[in-house]
Image (tube, rainbow, N blue to C red; front, side, top):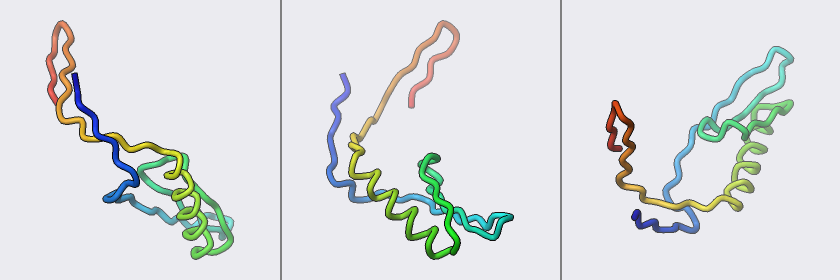
Length: 82
């Protein structure tokens, strides 16, 4: 049995903000660790602001559960411990 500890609010979450210039001249901003969190806007600043707002809103609905220290996955040929 694995003991899980719930953290609320997350205190040490680090993510990577990606900004891309599109062929149309618009900008796309996304959070690398959350592929579905992507915004397109007319300006770089607007794209960054909107993706940050969308990401923070999404975090309000996510429950962080940690640590998961050790899991063992066993198959007939391979045994892996993380």
